[in-house]
Amino acid sequence: MMGKRITKITAQKRNPNRVNIFLDGEFAFSLDRLNAAWLTKGRQLSESEIEQLLTKEEFTSALGKALRFLGYRARSHQEMECHLQGKGYQEGLIRTVLQRLEADQLLDDSEFAVQWIDNRQCFRPRSQRLMKLELRQKGLDERVIDAAFEKADLEELDLALSAGRKLLGRYQNLEKQEFRRKLAGALQRRGFSYDTVKECLAQLEQELSKPEGVEN
Image 1 (cartoon, rainbow, N blue to C red):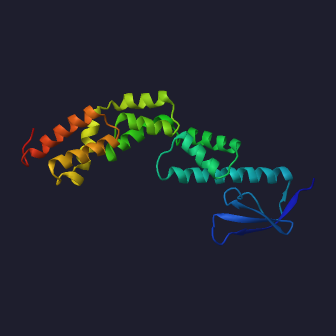
Image 2 (cartoon, one colour):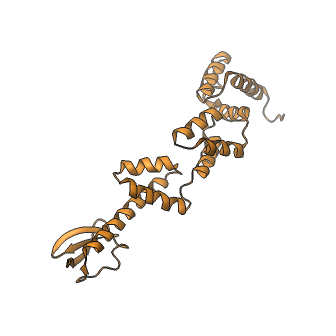
Image 3 (tube, rainbow, N blue to C red):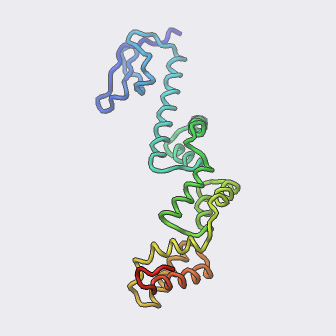
């Protein structure tokens, strides 16, 4: 087969990083400017070359969406796979994109688990049980989760105290019983056991009762 001849290449008005390709006088498809860099007006394209162009373009599109998804925060392998499925890409292409992200060290469940735990510790402390549940829901293997927690070497009471200190501002002006009830409920919702919550409340109340400037 003779294929088709490129009769015009024009930049898109709304997106200068993309170009429109016209074959035999008719609009055929649009491409990322980099994918179209080797194309010139008058060039003859075979059917296989056109197919290769469109395959590469689809990969570029899927990879771009994956990178934007990673721009907000790190993602687990399952999160990324589900995201690309939701965008309508085929399984074979999704596998190729995932392999590229893994090769570039942008997708790593072990590193994701470590970052997730660290982020929770810093900003929204909760029990180890609840953090493990969150990681399971994101598709992480149990061995990966266990290795991340072994590396983090966390103490449950320390997590509860960290969570409690962040919550004090909401409740410290309440009456004592109401303070205990509200703070205990909040800590239990963060996944802490009754015994841990009880110990945490006792230590926080002790801290609050100390005059300012007095060290332990």
